[in-house]
Image 1 (cartoon, rainbow, N blue to C red):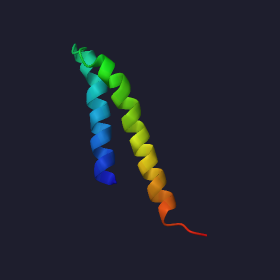
Image 2: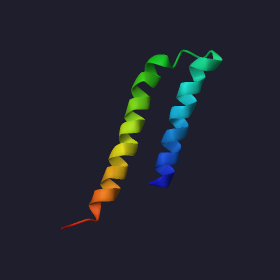
Image 3: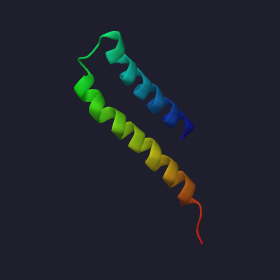
Image 4: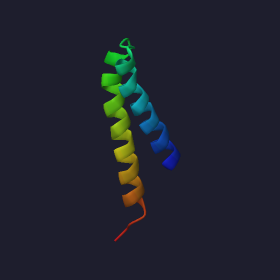
Length: 55
């Protein structure tokens, strides 16, 4: 999970920096990728936290 989180956070960072340096062609794509990446990190961490706990 740590590798997935690291890759997704890096992807989010790159997508947030691209418009600041003048590359705006991916602007529409980044509006979808950023929320999906954040959602993937959140769901992955929730699954990890609750998968082993059975009461």
